[in-house]
Image (tube, rainbow, N blue to C red):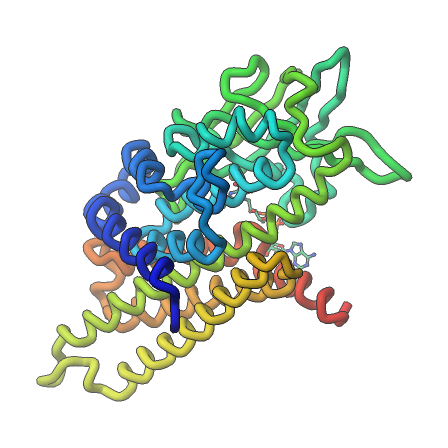
Length: 380
Ligand SMILES: Cc1cc2nc3c(=O)[nH]c(=O)nc-3n(C[C@H](O)[C@H](O)[C@H](O)COP(=O)(O)OP(=O)(O)OC[C@H]3O[C@@H](n4cnc5c(N)ncnc54)[C@H](O)[C@@H]3O)c2cc1C
């Protein structure tokens, strides 16, 4: 697919970095369930955080496609590192850039672009997953302070030492009989705010996933993001962009799995010849290549729509659904090509097979994407 020189350079730079710094340690970090602060800082030094932000806020002034290529290249090597980058950029930084005041942008963004600090977006709760109307966390404005009570779960980048805060979606009241949602910043160290890392994940084991608890947690009124009652709008816009990141992770993971399978099929000999010579194997590889090619074209087109400020909600849902579903299919066939060895941790395909599973669940499950698409095409 044709890309500009600038985009090709980003791909090469991030690929070199991922191959050099991440690939050699990815399996061990996964095994130990260890988040790498060192590699996170390095990603920051490479300029991968806040890539699309103006330089005055510490960004690189790049377009959405550049960022998506960066996520894709990390995911080609490791899902956990890609998750750290994607969540920080799409869920942490982007809502602040899109809805923050000038003062908030100057306060938070340069720090968050450096890679020395991460920021999270707290939407999911024990009883509010796909249905955010189930949100129970409350925020009440009393004497110039927001008082927050409730809890969040499954929050990426919420509890690592370098995670400096979270944008929390809370119910701030009711309007016309409906819950009114508001988004508020809560910084690490605020009294009443506690964080707990969630362990024993099947996938993304080297990414930081957390439970967050708010117990009469008081933050200044100025920690409001956007306006009171704007929470749903902020959440929906954030999720649209977040879907592109998950799509990029599906695409990158598929590309990595495909490359492993192709190499293995060329090297593995059975019945006196390389297994790639069996038509059934070469057709599996051909089917993978077709899916990856179509996924990439659709995702890049959606990035273009976003960069042009055109409506991209339907395309983002299609990209998220398709890229995450093909990641499942491609990883499965790539593992099949590895035979019994694919089930052993000595081979990276085993980790890829586990990592792909989150992609059909996070940031809106496949069922919810179908619901979004069905609504957009007027089918419901
Ligand atoms: C590793 C990880 C990282 C995450 N990071 C974050 C984060 O940074 N921030 C954050 O806020 N959240 C995060 N999440 C949460 C994630 O977005 C949710 O898990 C996801 O939205 C699904 O919610 P749920 O798990 O509660 O499932 P549920 O909503 O309970 O869904 C269960 C099943 O029911 C189906 N279902 C639900 N409603 C419908 C419907 N109307 N029609 C048809 N089927 C339906 C679902 O598709 C699914 O199959 C993360 C999750 C994980 C595992």
